[in-house]
Amino acid sequence: MKKQTVRLVSALALLALLVTGCAARQASSPAVSWDRVEMAVEPAAGLDRGEKVVFETVVVERAVEAEAPGNAASSYGVGEVSLGSATEQMIIRTANLSVVVKETEEAVESITGLLKSYQGYVTESHTWYSGEDVYANMVLRVPAGSLDAFLEDLRTHVVKVEDSSITGQDVTEEYTYLQVRLRNLEATEAELLALLTEVRENRGKAEDILAIHRELTNIRGQIESLQGRKQYLERMTAMATVNLSIRPEATPKPVVQDRWTPLVTLSEAARALLSVLRVLADLAIYVVVLSPVIIIPIVVIWLVVKLIKRRKSRKVS
Image: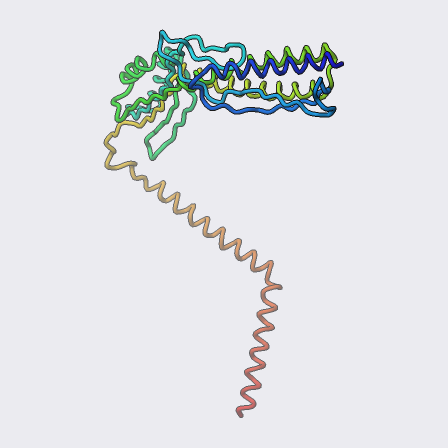
């Protein structure tokens, strides 16, 4: 049992030395945080029974920026994890346009067809009426490399472009950082898996296995979170976003909107009169039905008032 414990202590110590040694090689390395993992083990030589041996595992919190071409790539983490070469520039491009068209619904169909020819798609589309005019807002996704060509072709499908702007968000540094952290965590996960296998083969204590398993679960959660963010950045940089606002071209309105039709006016007046008669008839029905409840209190009040007046007149006389 002592030999197994010594091997376990040696393996964990070696893991801690590998991690700290790789991090120490970076003279200008960023700040790191330390996750403390406590494991209760059988006392080895020189240790009292029940004493806990504390090991430390380093987790890189921020990756260094990619160095210029020709320099050695920055590295972090366990097992000599390195970035290899600088990540190509990644830009999230967004275009905002406000355009005028002859007919909104036809323009929406035409722009949708143009978008499909560029292997793009519509993520949002909203059309509404303001008076007799039709307006629309669209959110389009088009391959980032084809954005400029798509915008040029779009200008041929509209009367004019009132306002346009293109913005870019550089996420290269964040993407590089995610790559480094992922490789670091994956290497740490591999070391812990190997350590877990060794502990199980040597029939280590359940507390040791559970402690390693908890650390593996924590690292796996971080890996999945970083992978999700990395995939999101890849999708956003691969497809540019176009926010498109469409309004119809102003056209002169006729002086007389509709032709006057007396018969229509007479019909509307007759319908209004019928509605009033219906209301009066309904009111009369309610009065008849509720007359016992309404008339009796009124008669009682009238009699009381009349009696009071008689008494007052007698006193005066």
